[in-house]
Length: 444
Image (spheres, helix red, strand yellow):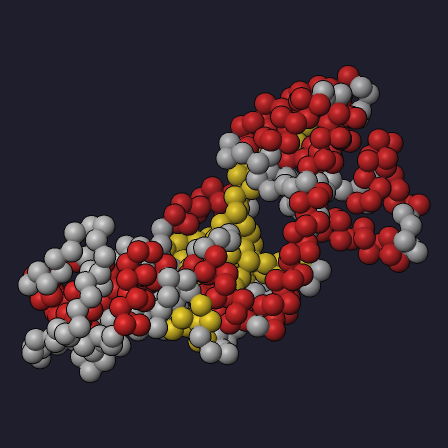
């Protein structure tokens, strides 16, 4: 996408105006689009909007007289974790340079607002173009082959989000999510059938590639007689065996038992010391199966206990959304209700903080309407909230982010109240307040 922050809307508005005018700049808007002659020369392709890192560098050189070294410092500052502080230092130099070259304060304000809007998120033009091509390809694959696409995204272990986000997206696309299984999983998450994915051992906390390889080798050699046999033949360490058990990966070895009984068998297998391998040795090639001992009639774990333990080793729930971990109050509104039809309506949502993108809001004018001696940079954020039915994009302006931002640090449901804003048919929730719903108790 071009530009950054609020200037995305400006770009879109000007693009449509340009198209309506026969692919020409409307003469009555030329002065607004290009308030300085240098900007028309630099930004004619993007309708007067800074869109790429090159634009930022060239504008600082043309307007403020920055040397190439200083222009590059400005480019680098936009992508740093301490962007606000670094921009504060460079802003004074930019304003001073522009004034020395006769640039009016009005133009300085407009251009610096565009520059500072790039804070934390800017690209070169070549990078942007290459990503656009990849995005078209990914969109096609996701639309037509969701199970293939989501399985490979998760297997790749990259991307902007945690694996839990991709698991939920797969579920929303109608893909069945199957828990890890020592009889079916491989190291990488993979498609299993036309509409399902099988969670790989890569997502089980504490399980390494060597352990996964031994599991695949041994199950191909002989069927497992039970948990004890699996433990010995695959040389599974005690912590690995418990992680697999909590993840649900051992369920298929003894499906007639409950979760508590399978955990008990794991403890017995480890206690009896049947695995004698030392680190670095190969799996034992037993030809005679080791059967499990008789199992006590133990009371099963509660659903809440099982889910919390599974989440502890996976970071998600294969059979339910993360909100199933808590008791939640009645909810009138859901994330899917943040739509254009609800423009101006105040909604109260309960969801999980999926991802947060901190940015910087820049103020060149004070509350009294007077120009500030130096630009003031204040943090704000764009936050994606998720519930069982979908996603909601929310914007936390500086006041709300300053007051309620700390709640985003916790893994717990958020109660978010805000007003639906709509631009070009796209709806976001402008957050007014937020708080943690959970008081420490889980569902069940």
